Image (cartoon, rainbow, N blue to C red; front, side, top):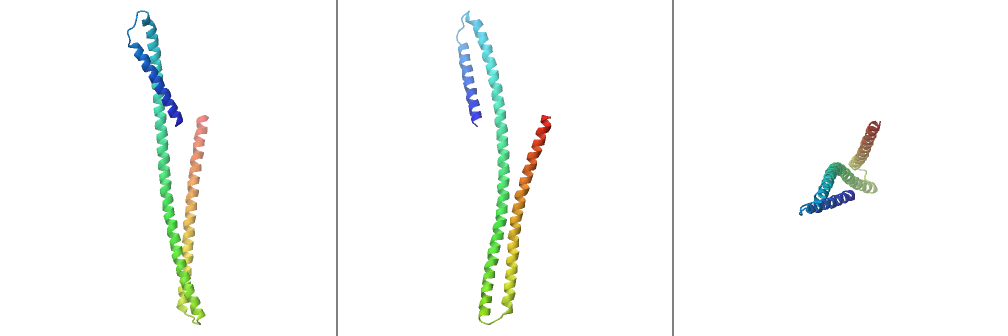
Length: 176
């Protein structure tokens, strides 16, 4: 951005010089000065054309930078949305795992109490086993969500590396 500011300052200074030169032309011209002023007008006109060309080039560069920034912002917004969805999935898996583990702890405590009392109740054993199976399924779901997140990140990195490699190949072809 400092390059743009520097170029803008140069353009402004050049336009000020041109404006002051044109003000000098509006004063009455003596017979001897007429020849000198036409050369000055030609020089100022050429300088004005150069500055207009430079200004047009700067405007094109600013537009290209803006488009590049817009593209980068859109890509970042898409990445944020993808990560939010991934986070929601992870949070759901963790919450389920927490609920199932709490249920498992309750069932195990009840089973320990029944065994300590000398009561072997088959329904408590079955309930405990079902809670343990559910905890294993929840852990597997959380692991799966984590693996999906890792695979998603790897996929994004591979796509980015492929795009870079493709860009390098295009540069090599252009250079050849």
